[in-house]
Amino acid sequence: MARLLVENVTLRFERKGHSSIVALDDFSLTVADCEFSVIVGPSGCGKSSLLNLVAGLAEPTSGKIRLNGHVVRGPDRERGMVFQTYTLFPWLTVQRNVEFGLALRGIPKVERVRIARKYIDEVGLHGFEDAYPRQLSGGMMQRVALARALANDPEVLLMDEPFGALDSQTRSFMQQLLLRVWEHAQKTVLFVTHDIDEALFLGDRVHVMTARPGQIKEEIEVGIPRPRSLDVVTSDKFITLKRRIIRLLEEEVLKSLTPAR
Figure: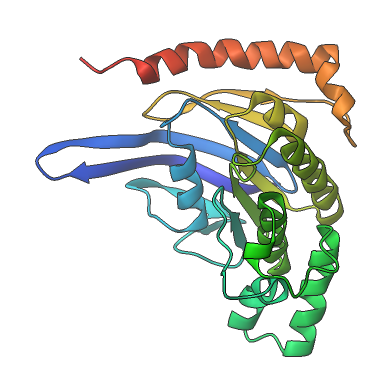
């Protein structure tokens, strides 16, 4: 069953006194139930714009986005978002940050405390419930952001380069943590990254985008068995897929860097 459908979506930005910019052009994408789907593409190809559309934070110029057959018309708890930047409320503790969406929904205090602590434990932050964001490392803040998104029990988890600002060791730890959490929670995930290794390590399917205006250039089935360890990055299949994606992206990156005539 297809849980998320992006159907012939075009996103155009109008500029006063200038020609419009087409970020996405007749873009279509299918993400199956409980699939970990990853998008890679050159800078400026519309990856983040796509996530904003799926999240309901923006509206397409044309086309439809459907979740379980229903057209997306705005933000909703069924779609949880984790951004690259640290989006925690600095005046709230870890516990209160994770509870935030539950409180907005009117969940009774005892229940929201229980739910928040469950996901704080899940991301390995037991003992930091009363800490404030300023007392946490970057990786820890992203774990709080992940716990906050999961606490709302979304049907689809949207992740916009959530580990892009982390050092390589922390990033590797977060990738492994995310896979463990995903395998346990069995959420549908749409994940954006510039990192080909990350895309192949995490994803069931990798969608390679063209330069702007963004479209799907090729869809690649990863096919590497789960659960995955870091050893997979040295496997023949992983290296073959990585080379294939690099070749697909080379032409698109050159297009994105070439001034329009």
